[in-house]
Image: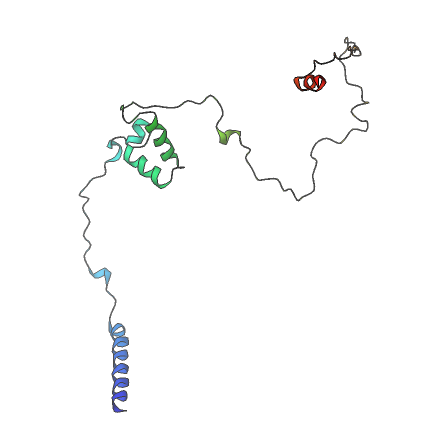
Length: 171
């Protein structure tokens, strides 16, 4: 019993000491310290950096492209590396290659905007419907042009029999 009482007192004393230490501490006074400017040892290089491999050759570096191909083969970098590697650009030290396409890009052809709501009722935004049907309406013809009815076409000729029909007749 006395041992438990001692442990309680000791743990209470430890808690009080831990709680009392931060309360007695004071915050540092930042304004009292002298300010020393930091010297830039490496100056900024600006525009004098050499062009990267991908900017010079329009393809990623061999090692970086291969790593990108291992990680995610469907990325642009990995696909361009794969194409350049199979065409032998790395092995032959080929110069910059730029592919020219003679058709619109997919993002130029695809429609831009929100999808249409299929659950909403159809809304017509065109002109009001005509009172006559389109079959009975007379077309507008410029003056001086006469409409002629279509000529009667002869009936179609009988098609030649197919191989299957000939084999059935032969039986």
